[in-house]
Amino acid sequence: MQIIKQPPLLSIVNDHLINYPTPINIHYAWNFGFLASMCLIIQILTGIFLAMHYTPHVDLAFASLEHIMRDVNYGWLLRYIHANGASMFFIVVYIHMFRGLYFGSYTRPRHLVWVIGVIILLLMILTAFIGYVLPWGQMSLWGATVITNLVSAVPLVGDSLVTWLWGGFSVDNATLNRFFSFHYLFPFIIVALSLIHLALLHQDGSGNPLGINSAVDKIPMYPYFIIKDFYGMIIFIIFFAGFVYFYPNLLGHPDNYIEANPMVTPAHIVPEWYFLPFYAILRSIPHKLGGVIAMVSAILVLVLLPWIHSTEIRSSRFRPLYRVAYYTILSCCLILGWIGGMPVEEPYVIIGQIASIYYFLYFLVLLPFMGNFEKFLLSYK
Image (cartoon, rainbow, N blue to C red):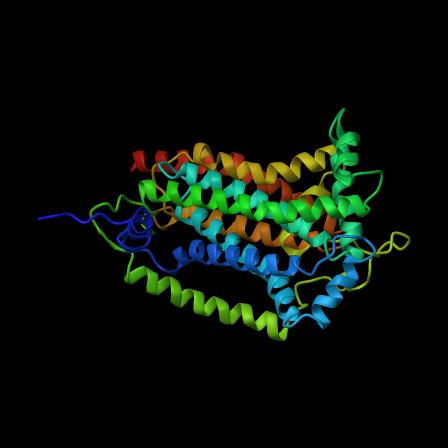
């Protein structure tokens, strides 16, 4: 009997989307990786079409967006999908990461999958930040000025780095051009890292809610989980469409509908909502360099989780103490997000400082301690 070989592309699709063995007990919390990939595709496609009409020049950028909104066929829809799509992307990725924290998805043998995921998050933050500058509204200009100025805190080379980022001695036309180029480039780097993320995941297989080896209890991804993923996507599109059609400006800042004016400073400069927890950590340190280090460390500390983890039990379903601690870190992140949007005054400053301290204590002290304490309790029993 002659064996017919599949073409390489069909073989890849078959191995990773059709016959890929999937744990039988995963539920809808595992949909968010698929939804994140859909968000990335939406952002790239809408971004390409917007770039066809956008002009990266300080005198024309704001007007070009008005042209897209008013004169380009369905330009308003493209812009609202892209602007709200960034928020949807972060909502999906944050849920995806907190699911990983709850079920211990960062532990071996999937530790490299987690590390690549954190790098993708960092690139997402950079891409979203420079994209926020492109509309060239008031918050775009002053947000870029404040955040890029933080680089000057780097010893010895800080001022030179800021000058390079700006392309001059202030946030101006050269800055806008550079940011536009980076904003166009970074999503394709994210695509490459996402493919690596997926390849590493499929190398050892997906985890499951029980956190156990499910090698003997798997079924093909198609049709069972493909249908489940697409059902989740339909629900997500309805949620997404609610913002696009009914509340398109709810997640944005009203000052960004005022053209950038370097002579007028907004009363309260805040970044987009998905940056607020990190912004709160930055503001909680009364030292410029210390604040920058704390903000960057808040992301990079996640990379250490596979090595900080001190127990063989992955899922929090079997760790009641960890489950309580998990909800405290979730609450801490929500509090930091709230504080990041508040003025720099009491009592917000002290609340932000307490939440920031707990954030780092949780990952660097509480997490490894709980694993060892649980081992002690088990041995004592």
